[in-house]
Image (cartoon, rainbow, N blue to C red; front, side, top):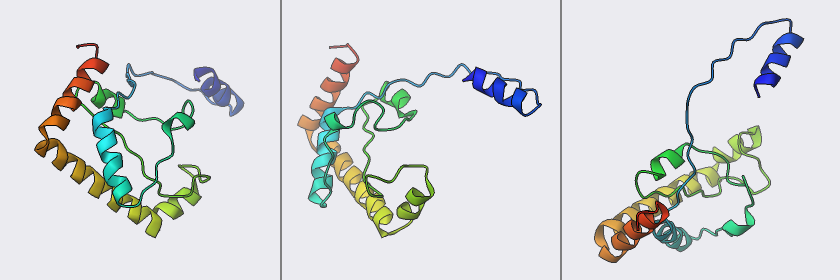
Length: 141
């Protein structure tokens, strides 16, 4: 990447000074008991889920949520705010995200997260499964 920046600067007749930060973006550690409960609630609102095994490598984008998920049980659910063929960070995606489809994704996501949080607080078995899955994923159990 640095070579690309340097070549671009040379091509533009400029100089570039690059200082790389020592930042670590850790892998996402999905807590499957929580994720499954979220999916249950989202499906109850009419949402359909694309099989995760069909996403392929890098199909879900990138996030620094991985850092959080290494410390506490976490999920990073994604609900469709645009048709599957619309690429995120594209003007078409922005148009869809600002439409009724995008509003529905935000509201369904908020409802599903709230219901999942309530279940976690009210269901001792879910809390136990959540903690156990987190400990196993971290190699602590």
